[in-house]
Image 1 (cartoon, rainbow, N blue to C red):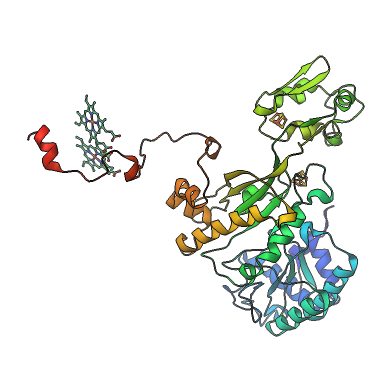
Image 2: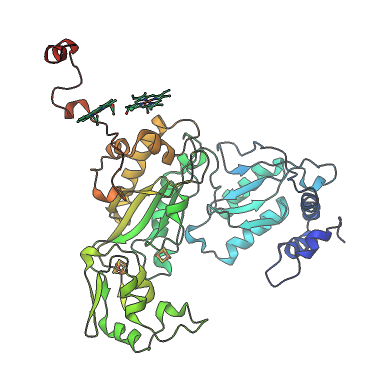
Length: 426
Ligand code: HEM
Ligand code: HEM
Ligand code: SF4
Ligand code: SF4
């Protein structure tokens, strides 16, 4: 029997999309707390305000983050959600699971929590939604001892890294995103569990510029796969596309009639640099002019593949609007090798240079993207020990407020006015 009337939420049980209300009601049959979460949510729908109190500081000993505390401001009415803390559990790379592990986590969560989850949080964590403070150490003990999984990150620290599914199921992956994500997560456990940074810091891994984990938009340090040599072309397969044997874009547009495949209109003319052409029925690419946008490869996956000299581009500084405005990441290092054999040494060198600088120079609650804007890209490139390249900018500056270092200017900055007046008397 429902514990509370939920006329507004009940409306969300209709329609074709899987209803979270129906799901929570089903879970409520096992756990009273779920009726109270529905009750409080219905009240918020009615009042049009949240009914969670501000903040909440809870956790487990040894760690400075991982659990987001939360308390109801209508706890008398909904005692099942008086405490409703969220536990972030570090997910496996690319979220491949066995049913055994998921069953183990569900068993713990049904016993010690609400039974509600978020699969997964935007950063990547498996999120366990709603439990009481006295259960936190119990849950942590069982997760670590029985399942062998750890908490994810929260607070002014390295958050849980995440990756696209990479070489596990994609022919375009230019490095092993899962191995890199796992290695970096394990290497920097201390930075993840115990906040030591000016603010949060996220790392995301995509195998190619399609960027399926959106690293360029939602990680402070984005590792995006790339290649240096020529796109591999299978000319027989190109002919297969031209004569309609293979569907363009792996059949992604089959829901509508776009006419027969036209390689000129759909590939050559859409190449952003115009570096492709046909010689008879042979496809040619001037790879020196290719920006690796992925378009031609996305359209003809059977015929075109990334080159074999593979690695990644490093971009830094993406963040949401608060405080100084949203940022997409800025390219810092055009190409590094991503080698599991040397434990991703080149990447770690970059990560640690970033942190060394930002941990000293970053202001309180200033994302690295804002530190770079405040102090300047030239200074950041210098601390990263990267030579400035034309590729570091979309366009050169248009204002003339250029700083020079004193040693770059003949005669330096110390000038004697009396000397000047000898030549230019008052
Ligand atoms: C043929 C006439 C002039 C020439 C060739 C000239 C040239 C220059 C140059 C080369 C600078 C340095 C720009 C820089 O630092 O990047 C400058 C700065 C300046 N000029 Fe002139 N100027 C002329 C006339 C004037 C006049 C008539 C005024 C004022 C009534 C003026 C006011 C200034 C001021 C205030 C600055 C400093 C701007 C700054 O600090 O950035 N100039 N001028
Ligand atoms: C009430 C009158 C004025 C006000 C409130 C005013 C205000 C300002 C401000 C805020 C700046 C920018 C300073 C900076 O970015 O560091 C500036 C720059 C400048 N002003 Fe004025 N100004 C006034 C009158 C004048 C007059 C009458 C002249 C020239 C005859 C003048 C010439 C300049 C020049 C050349 C600059 C550029 C200096 C630079 O590039 O650093 N201003 N002014
Ligand atoms: S980002 Fe690239 S490599 Fe990774 S899954 Fe997407 S298309 Fe494949
Ligand atoms: S990857 Fe993009 S830039 Fe390069 S050849 Fe293909 S369409 Fe042109």
